[in-house]
Length: 391
Ligand code: NDP
Ligand code: MG
Image (tube, rainbow, N blue to C red; front, side, top):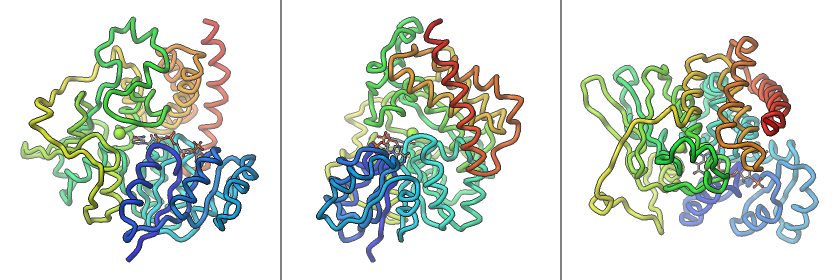
C-alpha cells in the first residue's frame, strides 16, 4: 500500500530530510500536500520534483509568485491561511509537522483534529499548548509520533514499558558551539558563531536555541507532555558526540537508551515507517569503535541561563512555557539581526516570564488562547527589545 505524506514546512531542514527519505522509497510513499512559509521558488521546485498533489504558502502575498512558478505543472496551489488549511485537509496517511516556531501551532492542530497520524517536529506546539494538544490528540484519535531525536530515542527506549515503571528520563544535549567557551566569550558571540553547530545541521532558529540550551529547555517541556512525566523525573545531560539521544532509567536500576548517528533522517524514518524499519541510503552507520569514547558532563546553567529559565517555566506550569517561547522567538530574531547580544536573549525571556507571571497562571485551554498569549508577549517583547539595544 502506498502512503500519502503531507509536509508542513517542506522547504526547511526537517522538510528536506523528509523528502529525501520519501524519494528513496517511491513504492511506499507518495507526496500529498507541501506547505512552505514564503519562498515560492523553493516550494515550486520541490513540488515539481516530488510530484506533489498540492502546494501552499503561508504568506498570502507570495501567491502570485507560487502560481507563476508552478504554471504548466498541473499542481494546484494557493497561499494564505485558508490555502494552508486546505493543504492539511487533503487526504494524507501521515502529516509531518515541521514548521518552525509558534507559526506551526494552527496547521499542526488542524491535522490533529482530523485524526491524522502526525510526525511532530514542531516542538513549539507542545511548548505553547501542550495540554490542549495532548487532550485533542486523544479526543480526535490522532497519533503523535515524536520526530525530535531525543524524544524519538526515548519512545524507542521506552517501548511498551509503562511510564509508572520509569524512575526518570534523560535527554542529551550536544552542548552547542559554546560548550567550552567562557561566559565573557559567549557574551560577545555573533549569530554566525552561535549558528555553527558542532554535530547537527539544522534551521537558524533551532541553531541559536541549541547554542543557548533553550532548545533543551523546550525539549524538557516537550517530553513532559509526550510522556506524561512530571518535571522531577526529567533531566538533561551534556553529551558532545550526539550519539546517545535519550535514556530511560527504570525503577530496578536498568537503563535503556536510544543511539544513532546525529542524522535527523533516522528519527524521521522511524516515524514514517509506522512500525517497519526503512533503509536510509547515504546514511552513515553508527561505528562505536571509530567514535572511540562517549563522554557526558552536567549542563552548566550559569553559562546557559536559558536552561534554568525553561526548567522554572516547566515547574511553574500554566502559561509560563507559552510566554517563555514567545519572548524567546522575538529575542532570537533580534539576536540574528544583530540588534541584541547573546545574553540579552535570556534577559528578555526572564523579564517576560516575570512580567506575565501573575497574568497567566492557567495553561491555555486551546490553540486560540495560546496564540493570543503568544501575540501579547511578542508585542511586549518587541517594545522591550529596542530598549535593550540602547542599554
Ligand atoms: P527551518 O527554518 O529549516 O524550516 C522551517 C520551514 O517552515 C520552512 O519550510 C519554512 O518555509 C516554513 N515556514 C515558516 N513559516 C511558516 C508558516 N507561517 N507557515 C507554514 N510554513 C512556514 O526549520 P527546521 O526544519 O530546522 O525546524 C522545523 C521544526 O522542527 C522546528 O519546530 C524545530 O524546532 C523542529 N526540529 C528541528 C530539528 C532540525 O534538525 N532541524 C530537530 C528537531 C526538531 P520558508 O522557508 O518559505 O519560510
Ligand atoms: Mg532535539
